[in-house]
Image 1 (cartoon, rainbow, N blue to C red):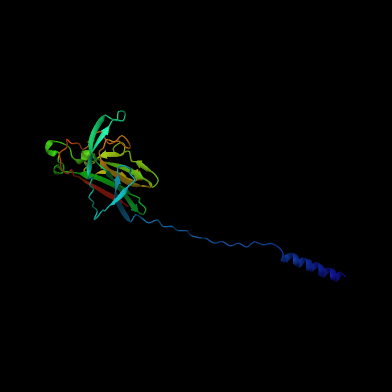
Image 2 (cartoon, one colour):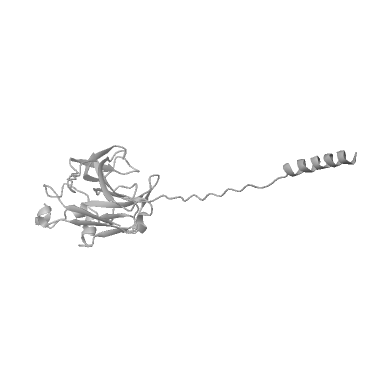
Amino acid sequence: MKRIMGLIATAVFVVGVAGSAHAIVATDTFSLTATMQAVSSISMSVNSVDSATSKIWTPVTVTGGAAALSFDPMSYKTFYDTVDPTKVVGNAWLPDHFFAIDIGSQGSVTNYTVAVKYAETNADNPNFAAGGHGLGWKSTVTFMQETGTAENAIVRHGGAGKMLLKDIALTGATGQVVTKADVGSGWLRLYVGIVAKATTGIADPAAGEVFTNADAAGAYKGTLTIVATMT
C-alpha cells in the first residue's frame, strides 16, 4: 500500500513540472532609411493670366532660357467714379492679361537666392525724345510666396510686395534678391503686369504711370532677368 501511494505521489509531481510557465524572448532590430535628394534642378514656368477673372492660365513657351512676354493687344479703358458712375475719373491703355512666373526646384534646398533684374535702354522708350518715361515706370512685379494652399505677398519687397520695374533696375547687377527666408517651404511666384492704378488687391506703387493718349506711339520694351541659385 505504501508503494502504491509513492507511485501516485510521484506521478502528481511529474505532471506539475511539465505544466510550469517559462518566458520565450525574441529581439529583432530594424534599421529604417529614407534619403531626401539634394536639389537637382530648377524650374521656371510662365503663364499668361486673364485679367478679368484670374482663372484662365495659358502656358507660355520658354525656349533656351528665354521667352517673349507681350502685353499686346492693349485697349483703351475708361474709368468711372464709384459714387457717381456717370463721372469719368480717368482713361488708360491696358492689356487683358498679366504674367505669372513660378520659380521652383526638384530636391532639398539649403541655400536659395533668386535675383530679379530689369533693364531698358533709351531706344526702348518711345517717350525718350519728349522726356517721358518708359516701360519701367508703367509696369510692375509682385513678389508672392506660394504654398500650394495659400498665397502671401513678400512685403519686404517694395513695402507691400509690389515694385515698379524701374525701381528694380536701380538695384543694378545685384537685382532684387529673394531668399529662402522669404519663401520658407513654398516657392516664389512673380506677377508681372501693366500699371492700372486698380483699387483692389495690392495697390500699384504711387509713382507708377498708366499708358495714356499722351504717351508717344511705339513699342515700349525692357528685359526682365531672373537668376536662381540653389544648393
